[in-house]
Length: 172
Ligand SMILES: Cc1cc2nc3c(=O)[nH]c(=O)nc-3n(C[C@H](O)[C@H](O)[C@H](O)COP(=O)(O)O)c2cc1C
Image (cartoon, rainbow, N blue to C red; front, side, top):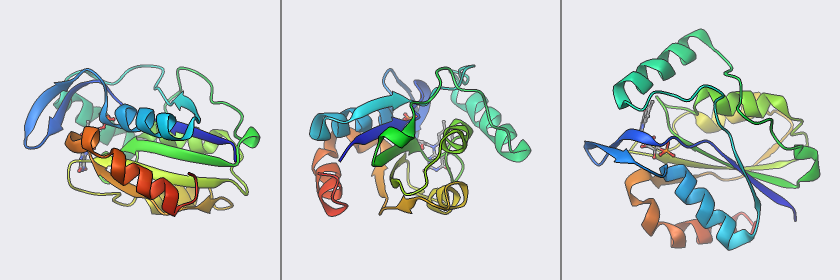
């Protein structure tokens, strides 16, 4: 089975366990690296061409503006051809209840027909939110696998949960 892990993750000031702290490595990126170690899969970082603000509140304002205007931000690097893969593990933070808009750009840029998509969402308490329903809408012909919610500030301790999830969904 050929697996790609495509993930969005932001460094900078972020909300974690009730405080605003600086994350030099994003939580989802840390989870994506654990997945790559476990599976040996390829990694693709879904980066917005124009980075989001370092400041947490400014970034929330940018994200809300993009959601309200239904914007598809340009990506820094074009996405790999998903037709070469059997499964895509999709990592993203929960932003205001769903995926950041660059992930929408990514999902609309490829043909996911018949591909397995396994969502992994890091968050500070909202779980997967409505992200799974949004993925289903964006990729109606994909096979959506069970998603995993990981508390962002506990990502370093989540290796066991990630490994068990990958085994449950038969990607490991
Ligand atoms: C713009 C923005 C919006 C967010 N909205 C939510 C939210 O609605 N619910 C939640 O539980 N966490 C929310 N968070 C927290 C992130 O989901 C969490 O910190 C995540 O682990 C960040 O992943 P990253 O470091 O890979 O970007 C938000 C963070 C940002 C920056």
